[in-house]
Every structure is written in structure tokens, then in C-alpha cells.
Length: 209
Image (cartoon, rainbow, N blue to C red; front, side, top):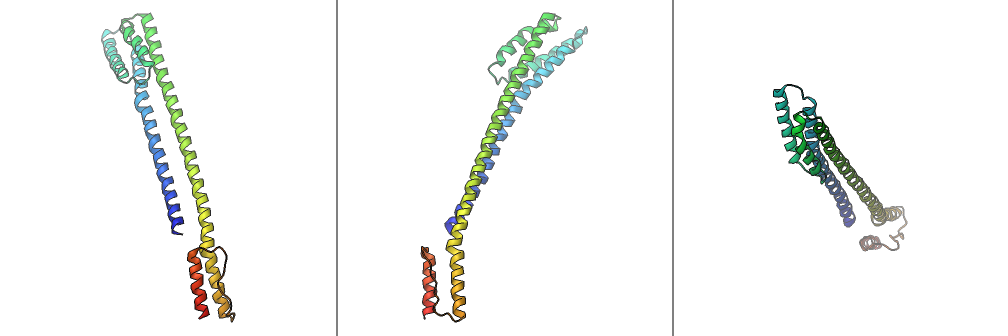
């Protein structure tokens, strides 16, 4: 009985620790998506906004170029995908001409920024799928452990019935029969555990005396 109780406690503790481990593994995966790719997407938005606000005022254009360079620097410092360096190189080579008013350079720079954003969005989608797959695997793992706990509980219930409930019922029946005048009734049963057989023998010896 003690072994069965400790087994159930151990399985429940294992399931709880497994659940905590799964959630702890999923949280960093989601955090990576936000920290790595979201930063590059924000830089892309700022670069596009700077190009969109170009006008004839050189002072404003100079300030916009400064914002563009700052955003580009953040994107360069946050390279996480192997396709990003090519897009960043195109942006770096063409943005000066774009701010100088070169229409072709503006189009090429905008295309490169859009490509950079697409690369990071695809990376976020892939990372999200990976996190979901890990979550699904973890959920099924918990279900498997729960099923194991269920069957262990059923086995423990059966053991409880055989080793405790039925022996107590037998002892109760024998004592009740003795009180009612049936002094020949004794505790009996087949395939009894050693502890139960010891108790039965003690009760029968007491009744014999």
C-alpha cells in the first residue's frame, strides 16, 4: 500500500514538473521571436517612413536620413537570418542616392527594405510553428503521463480493494458471525498477501482461544 501511494505521488509530481518544463521551454521560444525579428521589422518600418516623408526641405531630409541610418544600424546589429546580409547590403549601397533624389535608387532601396521585412516575417512564422509543434508535443506528453497516472490509480484501487477493503470486510463478517453465535466461522481467503494472512491468522487464533 505504501509503495502504491508513493508511486501515485511520484507520477503526479513528475507530471507537474513536466508541465512546468514545457511552459518554460515555450516562453523562451516566443521571446526569441519578439526580441530578434520584431526589432528588424521595426527598423524596416522606420526606414520606409523616412523615405516616404522626403520633400524639398533639405534640413528635414537630413534629419530623415539620420533616422534612416540609425534604423539601418539597428537592423545590421540584429542579423538573425542568413538571407538578411544581402538585403542589408542593397539598402546600405543605395540609400544615399535615394535621399539625394534618385528615383531608381529609391525604388531599389524600398524593394530591399520590403525584402528584409519579408525575411523576418517568414522567420517569425517558422519560429511560431516550431513553438506550436513543441507545445503540441508537450501537451500530448502530458496526456500520456495523465493516462499513466490514471492506470496507476486503477491498479492502486484494485490493490486497495484486494489488500485492505476485502480483508476488512472478511474480518467484520467473521466478528459479526461470532457475535451472533456462529463460533466456528473463521477468516479465510485464497492468494492472500502475507500481511493480510498474518492478520487473519491472529484473528483466528484469538477466536480459537
